[in-house]
Image (cartoon, rainbow, N blue to C red; front, side):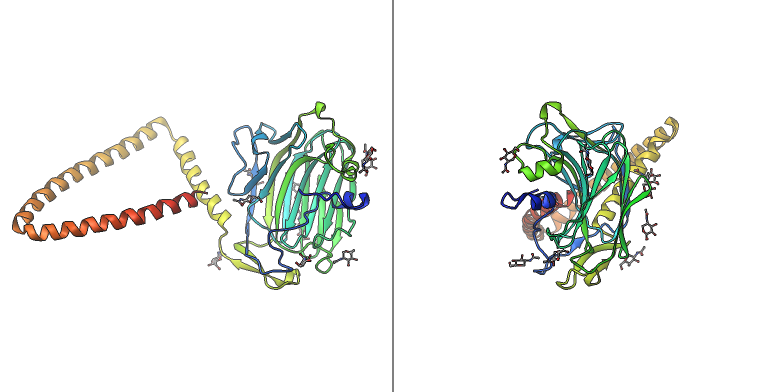
Length: 367
Ligand SMILES: *[C@@H]1O[C@H](CO)[C@@H](O)[C@H](O)[C@H]1NC(C)=O
Ligand SMILES: *[C@@H]1O[C@H](CO)[C@@H](O)[C@H](O)[C@H]1NC(C)=O
Ligand SMILES: *[C@@H]1O[C@H](CO)[C@@H](O)[C@H](O)[C@H]1NC(C)=O
Ligand SMILES: *[C@@H]1O[C@H](CO)[C@@H](O)[C@H](O)[C@H]1NC(C)=O
Ligand SMILES: *[C@@H]1O[C@H](CO)[C@@H](O)[C@H](O)[C@H]1NC(C)=O
Ligand SMILES: *[C@@H]1O[C@H](CO)[C@@H](O)[C@H](O)[C@H]1NC(C)=O
Ligand SMILES: *[C@@H]1O[C@H](CO)[C@@H](O)[C@H](O)[C@H]1NC(C)=O
Ligand SMILES: *[C@@H]1O[C@H](CO)[C@@H](O)[C@H](O)[C@H]1NC(C)=O
Ligand SMILES: *[C@@H]1O[C@H](CO)[C@@H](O)[C@H](O)[C@H]1NC(C)=O
């Protein structure tokens, strides 16, 4: 989160959480396609969760201070300069994002989740830890910081209990829904004036009230953070993300208008979809096995061991036969054997070179 110091305070307050650049802005350039989610994904974090699934989330700050408890995933900061940020590896293009979370208490502490696109369309929810009765919604088109769209919505103890924050984003309208009641509706407007391009999700906690922040930011955040009152904890119990289109593998800007109608979707299973489904197949097989009776487990184990034994015996017999046949053939033609052997050596060397490339690829694929 880079923030500029040279702007007047009023502007700073507005642009405080705004992204001001992206690695490739499709309004200016031809950019690579964006990987899509392409389905509806939900997850609940518990004490047995070990990490934010790296297939879905790229933790770009504070990975070591994400803890898992019965309540959910806890994002913790406790000293000046600390933040926790997770951003999705996927994009959604229209859709619904539902987060059940409890914001962090603490003056100047910001718990946040945003939708951000490559051409800097942005949808925000920001919760100031020093304000126990309001949360802020905000949005930008094309990262235009002359837009002042922030609004505050009464919410009962955002840092005291879990709330359901849902963003429903369609071509017709954009809604923030807090605990099942619509807090805000923004109607569609042309590109630059209404978020309408494929977006990643970003969630996290940071201290807008840190003394190292510009005054405008500290003011916006609700005052200076007192680190002696920490640690400050944002708790995410569950997340449900539904992409606006299903069976979609990627999104691409068809031109430089930033208009929703220029977005081209490629159909097919997304990378995330494939990886999540592969994982759940393994999990379901493991679950099935675990749920079997001890007798059935032993039966299966015996079957497996038995099959291995039979295979082993067959292999030994095959080897003995082959060696015998090999000996006979060698006796027939020593010269041919030598030729074959030379070929074999060359083949092996080729394999060794190819094998290196393969194991290299395998490593990349693991991610
Ligand atoms: C497009 O590029 C120009 C020149 O590099 C830059 O000044 C402008 O801010 C860019 N616009 C966007 C939307 O990124
Ligand atoms: C996903 O949502 C369904 C339906 O609400 C629910 O039954 C299921 O437990 C959820 N899965 C996770 C991992 O939260
Ligand atoms: C994670 O995010 C960082 C910072 O934006 C980026 O450099 C890196 O390539 C990302 N990694 C993945 C796997 O997306
Ligand atoms: C909470 O935010 C509302 C709306 O901006 C504001 O009126 C109120 O004074 C704030 N309360 C505190 C304690 O900062
Ligand atoms: C930024 O938004 C303001 C307010 O909607 C608008 O007047 C202005 O033309 C916009 N600027 C750009 C570069 O789109
Ligand atoms: C989101 O909006 C669409 C279109 O208006 C509607 O069909 C859907 O029920 C809404 N979803 C939620 C969770 O409000
Ligand atoms: C959260 O709110 C949305 C919008 O009202 C609703 O569709 C969803 O069922 C709610 N989730 C839970 C877990 O109550
Ligand atoms: C920030 O606020 C403090 C205290 O009000 C003041 O002393 C300082 O001059 C301000 N700094 C700037 C850059 O405005
Ligand atoms: C998903 O898209 C692919 C590619 O267009 C298509 O072959 C497949 O039938 C689609 N699957 C579903 C379930 O729609």
